[in-house]
Length: 420
Image (tube, rainbow, N blue to C red):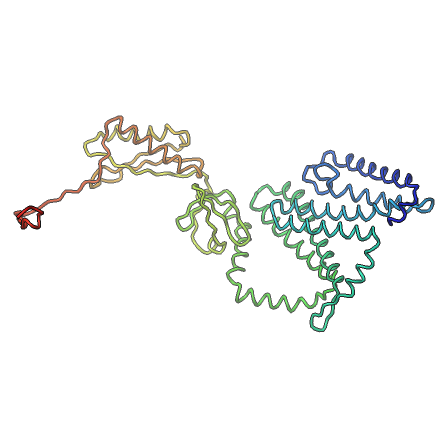
């Protein structure tokens, strides 16, 4: 292909190429003005999407066919493989960025494919691609009685990758266009997204295996073996996966609910297919297997009502004015903006304690995640009010009563450390 460039007369080629690129950009501009910035077709700047290299490739290939009857177009012959590799790179990059926005492995796969696509384009332009393919075809690998060449292996991996990328693209499109608009519940949308992606990846994987020449009927034996393994060796794992879908379908737990599991209280941050992530108010996170959430007793503090009841226990001295102390406790709760006025706070006397009159202050908060801070603020306000009012908060007291005469035992002077 490069030999034709030295013959001159590239004006037709350059003009046709500039026209094709301008027409492709104009079409992208007209069609993508109202598209979101994360669009796979148009990208952020129109030229970094999939549509621009595809349109440029189609127009350049058409121009090459039309002009080839009247004038030799070596430049267009070189541009076609370049645009083809660019379209493949853009497709992989945009799909992986949309589906896996923060995955380092996705970035690595993208770079590897980009270098392979550029290398294939360079070999095609230099005319070395047929020789390289022949050499790869000559490298054979033996798998039992079957023999497979390096070329078949590479083509199979590439075709499988294309099918799986298209499956991911379709699943991302369905999630963005249909699920987000029609399903407003976050948990239900997540389970629908997981099921859609899993089904499309399964179909894409089967198509990929068929594309590389794998007999799908042989998978029946593998499916039976996997079923036996799930039935015996993977019972817990399978149970956790099934429990995850049950939780999402029944909506017994939803993302954002405040729950208590084995004394650990926090907010449901995410519901995975195998486990549920619970984040406490102090920043700690607990990973709870989904089977545990199905088979054991779990307290959902926001299942019906997001409000949370908070209690504070406090003791005052026996000689204190009880009515004044109760009013100070109620005023301390009502003085905090996080405490609900309806239902109002309540102060009750619990018992005659050994050291103090024991009271309990009960109030409701609207934000369960802020209950620890609200409890602390109200407790500090109670302490301040009681001290200003002179109401005693007694320490625990113990009275030691000694009955009978006390014997004094004298020790020798040497033991007491005195001089003899």
